[in-house]
Image 1 (tube, rainbow, N blue to C red):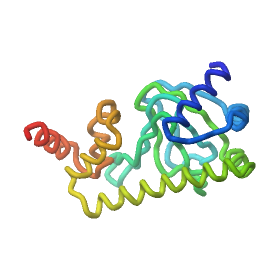
Image 2 (tube, helix red, strand yellow):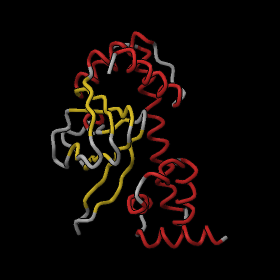
Image 3 (tube, rainbow, N blue to C red):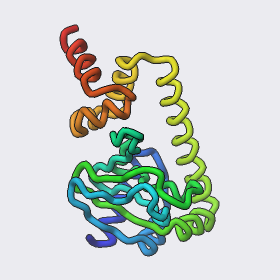
Length: 197
C-alpha cells in the first residue's frame, strides 16, 4: 500500500464523514501509524488486554461485543470504513472492556494510544476534529439509550436500517439482534412482519 493510496483513502473517508483534514495532518498520521490487513473472523483484542492501541478502519467491517454471565455475546457496535475501533485506551480505560473481531477482511490503521493523544493535542485543528468526533459519539450513545427506553424493538430495527442500510445486508442477523437488545428469533419475526405489510 503506497502512501499516496493511503492519503487518497483517508481523504475519501473524511469526505464521507463530512470532515475537512489538511494533507499535512494526514501525512503525519500515516508516518506515526502502522497498517495491518486481517482476515474475516480474526479476534483483534480480548477483554482484559492492555488498551494501548486505537484503530481506524480503512476498509472492511469490525464488531465490538461483550460476553454476558451466560457466555453469550452481546454486540456493542460495529466499526466500518472511517470508524474508530479499540478506542477504550483513548477514553481512559487501561484494559479493553470488550472483544473486537473482524466480520470481513479488514484493513486497519493503528496508533499507540499515548502517541495518538499527543498527536490530537499537537494542533488546534486536530483538537477541534477530536471534539467533533467525541460529540458525534456521545450524541449517538444518547440516541441509542433513548431507543432502549422509549422505542419498541421494531422501531429500533427500523432506525438501525435507516442509519446503517449496508450493515443490514452484510452483518449476520444474530449480531444485529444482540445490538438491538433482542433475541435473533424476535428479529426474524419483526423482519417477517415488515415483509408482509
